[in-house]
Length: 182
Image 1: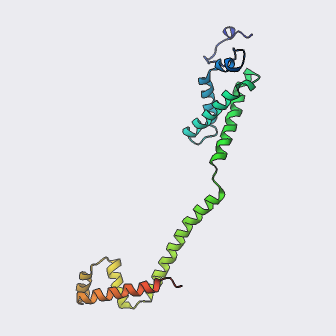
Image 2 (image 1 turned 30 degrees about the vertical axis):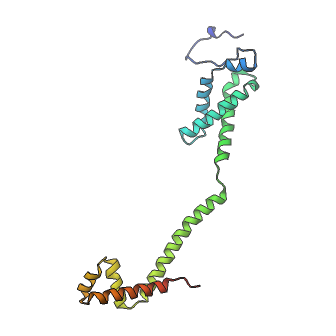
Image 3 (image 1 turned 90 degrees about the vertical axis):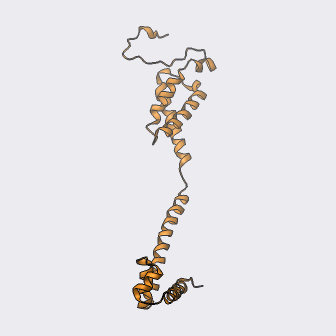
């Protein structure tokens, strides 16, 4: 048996050993805090953030606990844990991968909204162009300059009732020209 006390100590490192005979005794002899740290270090290679690395490391520790009796060479512990962490990271990646059809629907849905808004705006401009100059002036004063009906009547020197009726009729024309045909 190797005598750890006789080895020169360059850095103080907690060792992982298998002093127990096997089974639960063998697993109990492991330093599971150190296994967790090793797994976490390896998990950062595959994770985008700390939370994901911690999830991968935790899954790797659980798998190492379950499979600890398959480790044949204690000297190969880190590479064995690295393999487990890599496999857990790949499992994590496979679990989180969205279906391509989901992405297509989301992308097309966003584009559809923009396209519809652009088409509706073009239809509105076309409908405004079909109005008479007098009606366009009323719409421009009311909606572009945000003037009240009273202010429009005062500016144009027309009675307030006339402005109200004209605006009502212009909005009705616009509604009819923008209404879906079908």
